[in-house]
Length: 234
Image 1 (cartoon, rainbow, N blue to C red):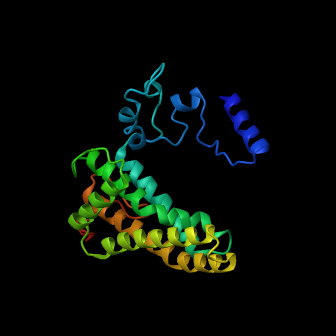
Image 2 (cartoon, rainbow, N blue to C red):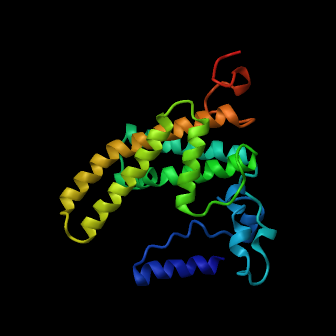
Image 3 (cartoon, one colour):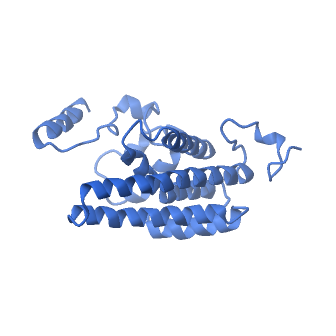
């Protein structure tokens, strides 16, 4: 495994191509759960390995980093809330592009993660959703069924719309139709809308999960057992 990381380093140096080796782990790391592959992520592997496996099945030795599906959704949402909150409160401490990219990816990624966990917990039909269009359609239905207001759906659709706007902006910049200064200005404007929208959507899904998933608690809140299904203390 060390040799593989060495190879990545050579590619970066000699070809001047950025290679992320953060997802390269040793056998000890994968057998001890010291990686980022959680139970939901690993649940997708059997279908992708079908007919493509040579040698030992890696799933035979991988221990999930987080085994409880409810816990992995809680940890995922808590991490997103912290990232977007930091992006809103301290937007000038770093380039906005990394946080903005996460905001654009959030509607589909959050939708897929939520659907996977809720399917495993029996809240909705449990099925593998690889296609982006299927995730968007199923998550829209999910929000329509479990959100108490239309706000979550509005933020979900707004996030998708902003992602599409950025794709058009980026295409124009790559084609040379948009000057670099104009592009950076537009990115800043998108940041001011996309990141708060993503933060709000995460919060709304957090509340949906707390109402409907057994054992799910919102990070930093009083234990859910003290509350009824609508957050009213019993």
